[in-house]
Image 1 (cartoon, rainbow, N blue to C red):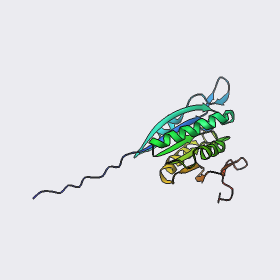
Image 2: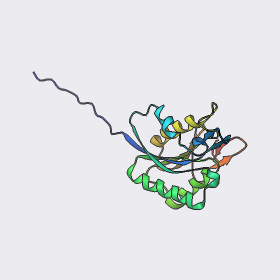
Image 3: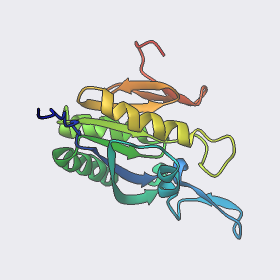
Image 4: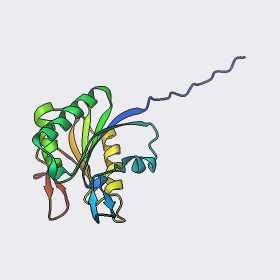
Length: 183
């Protein structure tokens, strides 16, 4: 009598493009100048501490700027890079400074429309190096959300996923809102 073996089905890892642009989430402390600056990316350290089974992260280090220093050309470059990465990946996460994150989200919607896959923007109000940071939570939420939501452009931060257009930074509450949505 022959035995029937059931071969487990192994799903291919989801390919997620992670575009880094700088911002508070990536700021490090320069002890000589006594300031936080965008000099070295800490994303690899953050990613190494996560359990990402079934996910393949493709790092795309695009720029390392405070978003207050971004130009319209920078926002367009981010949008076009997200569009390009969406062609060969199952999702795109963009790590971005929060001050101009909404501008980039709107730029992606205006230039690309609805991308082929979800595009999630995220950032942090406090740098990863600080004890009370929101950086790890927001990165983790964005990596999960990009696998679950339908194609579109979103921000994932502070236990919320909001869809563009119309997302705004609420400086009083230190988070993002979508007027008309339950925030």
